[in-house]
Length: 346
Image (cartoon, rainbow, N blue to C red; front, side, top):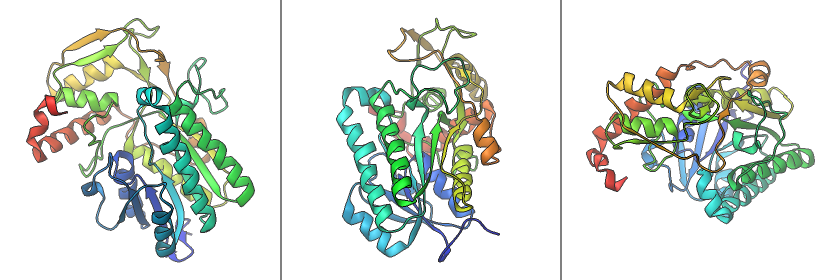
């Protein structure tokens, strides 16, 4: 029995932010599963060229009722996978209102359209940033939720809304709390293309390919093996497979889900850096700077629930693979656009 078969045959899935980093990988995954992805993206950080053939692209804002109505009326959407959001934590501190608008208020508009048009399943891109200052690693879903940033709060507000909408209207949902997303499509079809991205492995890959002259390391005095911060990195292809598994579970009648997505182990900043140097065969200069406010020494997921409830089995749980695919993607971008080497324009 195909649990991803829709009422109308080939299930139509709306992917908001589907022209972005994670969203474009999700679209590739849905196409491989025989589903019909419909992409909504305003292209503020995404790229039209990142949307694979076989997917419908609507260029517009996820908070635009007219765009949403056009999509839902013409495409018979049965499920939504919602990535569209602002996601730079320091920016949320300096401009919180834009985060509550983009991440929270616009999701409320999207949810209202889902209720109006009878969408059955909603997969939400949440974040480990919903947790407060954690206790001993690894973090469990039952950990106290007390987001220390507007970014985390804007995401947790959506988790609240989802729970309330599910109770009132019967919408099934999964909120997946990502840890640190990394890497690129192993086949070289997609990757992180935003020039000012802040993900560590993206930044390290840029340094390894000459796009950055050096790497800043914020804090080398944490209580970790080498003094630098430790994070749980998850390959983007494994992350999107978790979304597909969540959609399949909801279609099979699963209860609503709130799940961590990580590998359950972490790597330090210096470990990532040394791995990139070895994989690329280069030396990357570093500058050690003071800790940034709010940074933690170690953030690692407990992934017991997602492995148990969704039978999620990661395929790319290897730091060499995460770093290697990220570096290969940077080389692809350089070949496409040599002027990316001009660091002043980055």
